[in-house]
Image (cartoon, rainbow, N blue to C red; front, side, top):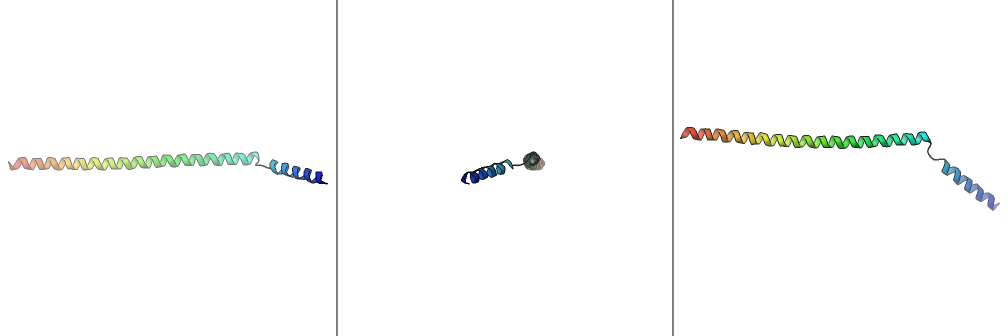
Length: 84
């Protein structure tokens, strides 16, 4: 009787272990993983583009200020030249 119970326990464990995910379930999991990875890559690319755009805006603003300062200095120099 003891051996019969041990045999049933071992058979039950083997059955439980054999009932893992099927091939279609594994394929679905692999597809979900690839989608998740693609989404992560897209998020990183979008973040990189956003940062690049921000840097470009800052550089354009700095150039605009430099041009304004240069123009103001030019106007001031012209006005000083007329006074003399």
